[in-house]
Length: 565
Image (cartoon, rainbow, N blue to C red; front, side, top):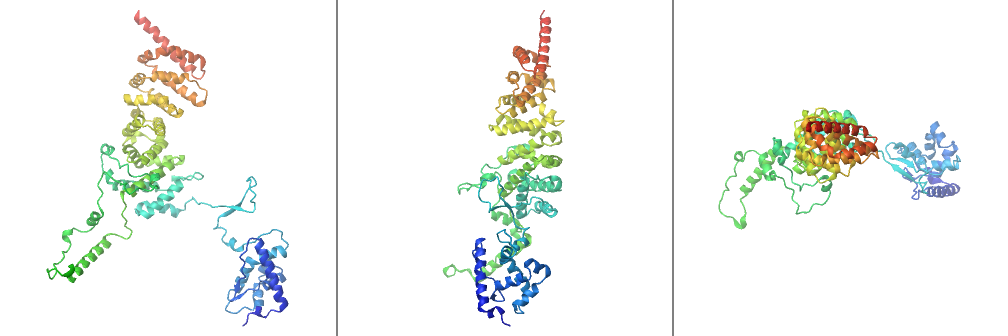
């Protein structure tokens, strides 16, 4: 059967060509320059005939509603081999002629092409959002593409996260760590641990597994662990992105077996392996050639070793170096740090006591700079919930925090450490761990009263106010610390011009009042009686506390005078 468009008259042919030119001009106006006439049944489709056939029946919408596309197909007299002619003609009309019909037949003034094929995939494509009026750009015809990043997990993905850490497969571990890193950084919809059961348990299990695989940390005694650190040549996450020179060698204090040694351990005892037979002839051959029997036996031995290796090692087995394990530990601690900033995650993290003990142990050991700082952030965020007597490393933690206060030269670390100590003071039952301070520890806290950061001064005053309200010996020790009373009086005299300064002056006054309860300390406060009187007369916020201190000092002077007489 011949295609009917081959028998067009001259008038129809001229009309078809004119219509094609108008259609091409219309498409070019709307940014569709590369217009090409589609084909059907191996021939070019007569767009003019298709357009007139649709218009005679009332347009595309009416033809589609009344299901008249079969009549259109019959007019074209297409061959029987074209089984999807109705769908093909409809698709071509939607793509090339529907917008033309809207403008010239329906009278729609809204210019532009209507892409029907895009509506089918609209849900999968990025949303197109037009620019708002407040943007001072004359680009109203353009649009911005906003991609939706789906940060909510399905139940299957949640289970996969748990199973990934339990599988110990490096590829799955990498996927899980990357996914959790993205989720933990999401501020708009925080990642909560309540909706992820067993995730913390699997994280803790893998963290313990990774720490156990690092030979540098293979020690059961905490005091021995304190002296062991991983070499500083291991780069952090931010440093690992930089190119490493060939001269840089990553070293560990614990010896790591070579590749040949690891292969030897996998195999059976070498004594059990069959020995190579002696060659048939021991005479030297020309050009150093070996006998054929020797070569065949050697290949057989290699095949035997490969067979045993495939039998013992599964296809999913992959060796993980200590460096990769350290990197995974860094990422896990970083994820836990991000999660600890969400208030809803505080109780799930504290309930996992083994994980908290591991974080405390990592902070004490100082195995890595980045890990230590992130552990400090975690302990600071969870400090008000941590009960030191429930931890196996409570005393070591307090000792390490005071060591940081004494020895650190970084102001950020000092501020964070003081905040961690302050929050630990808020938990009931931690007083016995914080009260037993050495003279050096008290000097370090008193030294932070001169910090430029007001929050650090406030944290130091809260700690002093907390421990000065406990034992008598502690009060005497604080008062006898060099420059302690002098700096407390100076902070009270600084005034309360801002809410922060008001809180600092009140805490300093309360601390001085606690110290004044001991008779031995009143003798140390007496030289500042005049300054305290001026403060009581000028500052209304602390005048009541200072007046009580001055009254006690007057009674002390009277009693002291009576004793002299």
